[in-house]
Structure formats: C-alpha cells, structure tokens
Image 1 (tube, rainbow, N blue to C red):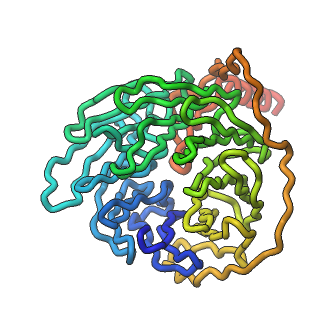
Image 2 (image 1 turned 180 degrees about the vertical axis):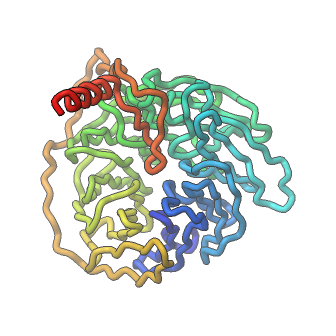
Amino acid sequence: HDDGAIVVATGRFVRAYLVNGDLMWDFETLSPGAYADFRVQPVVGPRGDLFVGDSDGLFYRLDATTGALIESWNLGGPVLTAAAVADDYVFAAARGSVGFAATLHKLPIADNATAFWRRSVCDHHELRLDWPGTGLLLADANVIVACHWQGFVDAFDSATGATAWSVQVSDLEDDLVPALVGGPVPDEAAAAILVGHAGGVSKLSTSDGSLVWELVTDLRPAGRPALDAQAAAGLVLLEDGTLVAFNAEDGTEQASAKLFKAAAFAPFVDASGAAVAAGSNHLLVVSASTLQVLNNLTLPGTVSANPILASGRIVVPLDSSAVALLAAQEPQVPTSAPVAAPTSLRPTLAPTSITNAPTTSFTPTASPTVPAPSSTPRPTRQPSTEEGPGNEVNDRDGTDDGWPHSAINTVAVLGALDVILA
C-alpha cells in the first residue's frame, strides 16, 4: 500500500511486511472455527483501509498501517471472492449453501453513506450451488461478478443492485475460471473485462457484456489471465504448465512456452512488464511480452495461493501460514524454512532474514514459440458426459467433490464381490 508495505493473507493470518522482509503487523481471523482461514487476498481502498473476508463469513475492515480492526460484518457465508472498494462503499460477496444463493453486499464505509443493499447472485440454476469467484470489479457504474460454476458474467447497478446485464461466456459447466482483470478501485476501472474459462479467454465490453474477442485454447486456464496494460499484452497459464502470451487488443496469440509440468495458479504482471508464474515449489520470472525466463527461484515450501509481484519483491503465500519474500531480479531465498504458525496461540513472527543465494540456471523444457497464422480455430474442449451427483462442495477447498457415476458403480460392484467372497 502507500507506506511501501506488502500485505498478504495466508492461512489464519493477514500480515504486512516491509520490502526488506520485516514484519509490520499481523491480524488473525476472529472466527473461532478450527478450519477458518483467509482464502482471498485483501484489497486496499482509497481511504487507506484494508478489506478481507474469511471462510467463516466474517468480513473485516482493517487499518492498513497498523492492522487494527476498524469494523467487521457477518456476511452469512464463506468469503471466497476479493472485494471491490469505492469511496463510500465496499462490495463483498459470500458463498451460499444448498438451497440458499450466494449474496452480494454493498456495505457503507463513510458516515454519510446510507444507500446500502444486499441481493442474491449466481442463481441462474436453482438446483446448483454457485458463487462469485476470484474477485469483483467496478466498471461503468456497475459491479461485475463472474460466477464460478455456470459460465455467467453478470453486472449489477452499483447504486441500486438491479441487474444491468448478464451473459454466459461458457456452456461447459463446472469449468469456468472466473477472472476479472481491472482495478478494484473506480479510478483504475477497466475498459474491458478478461474472463478465463474452459474454452480459453474472452474479452467482454463493460457496457453490455458483448463479446469483443475470444482466444481459444486446447486446455483450461489454471487461473485468471493477467494483463500488462501499458503494453496491451496478456498472459494466461494453462493447466499443463504452458504460459501463453496474447495481444489484449485483438486476442491473437503472440507466444507460448512450456514452463511447468502442471500449474494451478495465475500469473502476475507488474508495471515493469515482468511476470511471475508459480509451480508447486518454485517460481519463474519472465518477460510478459517475449516469455524469456529472467529468473528461476526455488521455494522452501509449497505455494498455496497466487504469487504477487510488488516493490521489486515477489510475495508468495506458502502452506502452514508461511510467507516468502523474494527479490524479483536476483535469486534470493530465506536463510531458513518458514515455521508453521500454531493453531492455538497467536505467534510472534521474527523478521524474515534474506540473503543472496547463488544464481541458478534454468533451461525451459520448450523455448517460447510464436504461432503460425492459421484460419482454423483451435478446438474447444468438449464437456464430459459424466457428471457428479448434485453439487457437493468441499468446505476446505471450495471444489466440487461429486463422484462420477462410473466410479460409484465400480465401488459398489467391488463391495458386492467382497461380501460374496467373504
């Protein structure tokens, strides 16, 4: 934020670090549940306050300088979506449960703010649980919501909550990767919306949701696309570890490179045009335009959330509530492995010591390639013919845990054979 600090949420804690690795403050969730944690990153508003919610439904307003709690709200469901902040209001979403739709809340954060509201969202199918994913976006006086499971992107009037427009960008159920690219603060509002989904990446108009272009990919994106606004270039990391660079103006693919065996996190682009992408336990810093590898960094733990590139440092949430702060241009790693935060006691975290590490060499498994022009679009992924029952959601990771019918039938047959043989 404005003080030059880096704020990151991981596990049960929100922590602020100076760029040298010193801990400024930390805040632990107030939820008493043993499994309550933060699953989205905080957002800093124009007043200097910080907003973040936890998986038990508590939504917090913190002082970004001290970490002190200013106020909190109970939204009634897990907060799995980053908030969007305006001058006098903050918009926050909560996941529903079976029989109860997800909700979008307009909450007042100024003394004279009185026009707040709450409405249901992502309720396009009454029998399927759905909720906003990744983050909210403010654009053209609307709040933009990308629904996680059914392929819909919806816009709601920020003043009244009325529906402004709604489009379905993908008809492959259970495969949408919601990705709204643009500032969560109005003065950074996007002129268009990039949405990652099972078929690739789509660019939508903020005024009516109409399709501007679509980049078709063979594989599902691992996370939201990233945008280098100054260079009008975008990046998307596919689930097989291939990083694809594309022209954000017309959607044409510019280059691609196989960087990881598999990927689960979105890339991040900073103002300098450098991008960071994460594997399970290491990071690559690449040029956002050419995909040339600038740095290869090995981590002392497993990545648990999307990395962030800020103030020349890569901020990486790790498992067990640990955070790694790494220099973006020179390979640097903490001198000791992060220590897991105890679940019963609030830890006092020592400042992270960072020293120079030897430069590591890295050769990508495939050099960046520039696609040849083709008039034939790349094939879209076809929906599976097997579906899990209902929409059973795992409370720990928010994923659909429904078993395919073939798996259920196989287990049933094996169980019957076991009884007969016994």
